[in-house]
Length: 107
Image (cartoon, rainbow, N blue to C red; front, side, top):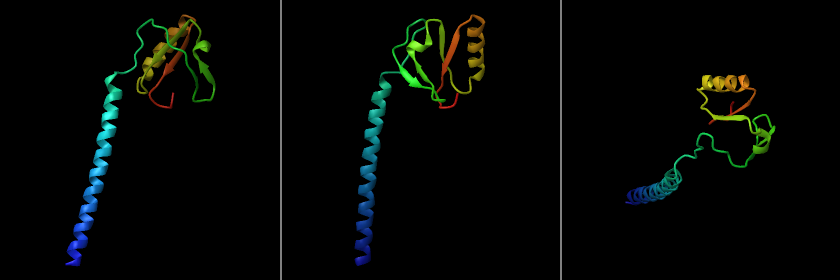
């Protein structure tokens, strides 16, 4: 009888732990859904970007003031290296600077 009671207590504790973890996951999913409800941040073509100040992956400072008026800003995914090369060649042929953002830390 004590073995059955011990097994029942262990199963009950595991069920309670599972319930607590499930409630935590549900809470996080609701927070995530609220963040996604606003949609992705977008900038319309020709729209000015807001003020920012960051460091590049090489440690160099970069801000909206350092870009200048004739800078092409492009956000490309990592597999789209052809798109980045196209933006870079387009901007350099017109004497402009090109800056690209990526979803990963590598650029």
